[in-house]
Amino acid sequence: METALIESRPAQSGSNTQYDAIVIGAGFAGMYMLYRLRQLGMRVCVYERGDDVGGTWYWNRYPGCRCDIESLSYSYSFSPELEQEWNWTERYAAQPEILEYAKHVADRFDLRRDIRFCMTVTAAMFDETSNQWEVISSDGTCARARFLISAVGCLSAGIVPDFPGLNEFKGSWYHTGNWPHEPVDPTGKRVGVIGTGSTGIQFSSAIAQSVGHLTIFQRTPNYSVPSCNAPLNPEELAEAKSNYRSIRAHCRYSKVGIPYVGNEKKAIEDTDRSRERNFEAAWNGAGFCFVLSYSDLLLDIKSNRTAAEFVERKIRETVKDPETAELLVPRGYPLGTKRLCVDAGYYQIFNQDNVSLVDVRTSPIESITTTGVRTLNKDYDLDVLVFATGYDAITGPLLRMDICGRNGRSLRRKWQGWPQSYLGLMMEGFPNLFTITGPGSPCVLVNMIVSIEQHVEWIADCIASMERDGKQTIEPDVEAECSWTDMVDEIANSTLYPLTDSWYTGKNVTGKSSRFTPYAGGMGPYRRYCEEIVEDGYRGFQFDRDLRQTQGAALNSPN
Ligand code: NA7
Image (cartoon, rainbow, N blue to C red):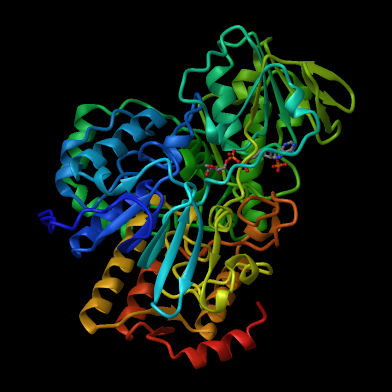
């Protein structure tokens, strides 16, 4: 049964307002955090940059935008009533449907009354005399709260490369992560897309039929597999609804937070024939789970090669022009170490006369002109230019804000070398600041909603236990933080991920320190670890830390 909401005190607007907790962001993480904090009877305010809920799914409105995790598991599990009343229509939900779901959740739980929309948090300072966070927002107002919870998402700080001349472009240009709310009709137009990650691939596949001409500027080819998306029929939906509790229970302790049971076999130990059969079956139905078709694809380079060769062959078989096919074949990095893309007929669009591929590795983009894109070899005239150029992932959205903890120590400075965090949840020197899906947590490697729910519930339980025990502050020890960060690193180094430059490693951002950020040990093991820490009296955390100790730790800290 759903827990009844305890009537919470309403948030107040205006300057110098006092709350029990401030949450930054009203995406899936922020909405659920608000719901749980209200259950504790807390006065909560959520600050949201957009004018409605939804986070990633609010901003990413580009044609073709769709989740690569199946709808039945990419949804909240906390409310059985919500599960039963919502009907997903497709195996992989498109952005408009996910946004509708987010809005439905906001309505159903009356969340909007505690959300301040169109408010960007610019800075937050911890006041040690009162143990309060002071939070400054874009309108210059300041609010105070004992707890500050970041729910800013991992992929919300979009990057538009600094090409000279962009301001002079006479056509329209957009970043996919900041897509206009009014419809953009590409019909018959000359459209250019820079970037061939998940977003560029989804966007290009969706508009290729309707545009006059589509020019895709590719720097690195990606591995992409068919989504095999399809409508969900009433029987499938009914079956899932009747089994939701066991599906959710499985997801919580699974490796990736999805109901898919991966193959325990190693690719390298299988016969050629059986491997071929297995890859073919995964290609024709597994979508993103293609990467789970053997247990060692992300661990063993030889095994990985077998999967990579399979996909490379599919590309060559699909794309009729051999030169284009060769340009599309990824080289020099293992499959899946840049996030595996899931498409709706991407390779097929290159057989259309109105689609061309430009290799900007051999002929780099030099500038944007008034009429289009200038590469080293050629000018391309365009009406619309789309940047599918990705994000300053995981840490970017946090560091856009000026966050200062004890002794005025800034998070930007602390994370100059590497984002140190304990469990991806808290940082030493930043009391009562929680990060939902922060660096060092499984975040982007698993079903994001499962990851969010686990963090939100851990944070809510932690705050509830502090209330019970009369504790004012919590923060991790420097030792716990260092050893967790080392463990994240060690696990990453046992996989193939760090071999590749990607947004997982931060290499896509000029000047960003490069190391694989997420915890790659899996959702289930991570959840168990977090549970053990609580059972062990919040091992590695300190409550009501003695200030003199903190100053000592700060002096000894390299950051
Ligand atoms: P990604 O996966 O980071 O892709 C960005 C793409 O943009 C990628 O192909 C980049 O090439 C390309 N890019 C970036 N900067 C440039 C410049 N300056 N010139 C040419 N090409 C450039 O972002 P997405 O939005 O597609 O996906 C992010 C995640 O969102 C996705 O994995 C899902 O989890 C959801 P590069 O590879 O760096 O050579």
